[in-house]
Image (cartoon, rainbow, N blue to C red; front, side, top):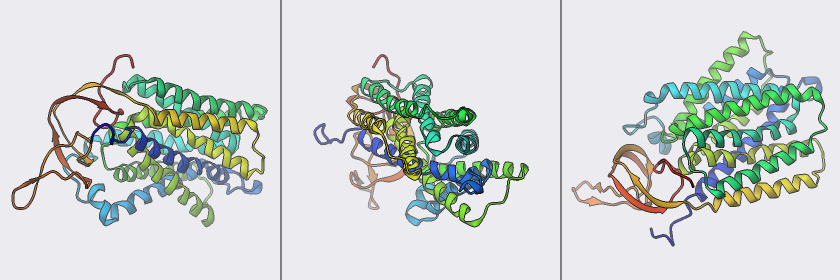
Length: 377
């Protein structure tokens, strides 16, 4: 591909991150409803029960995908060398503890106290926390577009929070709990970047299963009330889409554009959840909501238009992941049955392959193949 036909390196990752954010944001009011007492119109589930059901649903998404014939080969049945989770199992356990046990439990407990709308707005902090951690610990480049786009989205979230400044002081504990959830997920996001090379459905299955096991054990230990069938089905469905499918898309976005930008774009999720909470509550959105929406839109455009190009080196590397041959990085040949080599530029596939050392310059994101260090950007 030449530079006139090559897609912008951030566009696909941005779309994946935004879709993941919307899927997650839609679940926040459901989490609030599930934890609210029955007499107040909710399901009255304990926070550990809610968290366990969410991740049982997410695990079901990973398991079903693992069973599907077209996905099974890349998600756990016939793994190419280098795709197993065994070498990174310790990291998977830590990610499951932070993101599938601590995070959702704090969110479930906090949302009951704050309400779905305020809880959604506070969740906005996950994006800036992750952006900061990714720049500091993962050394991802900080460009002008990325910084301005993130600041625009943060400003939109701050406006929405200020618009809710008349909330009662009784919500303070709930806000603190939700902030704790955002930091747990920020640490999870940062640690998960090393897992983005692995099959995403397999990562979801492992992480969600461990998280569900831990939170279910805690729910039984603290004798939380047994849930009715309807809340179980609703929360399972929310977990399958807003946590399972959303996590798959999030990992794919991290693979494409890195942890910092994926999480900055994921900040759209709280706005979606807050808007849905306002609609459910029968409130009429004020002017502040529309201004915040404009800032979020500006942030998305800035992230999609980000351009980053310079001469960079690639060391020789051998690994396995899904790839195509139209990106100037996967130039290895495939051999047909008769022994003649072929360069397949049309179909994506998974196998172990080698990248020879090279130096070149082209537009790129901090994706799977561009995680080199930068100076001032």
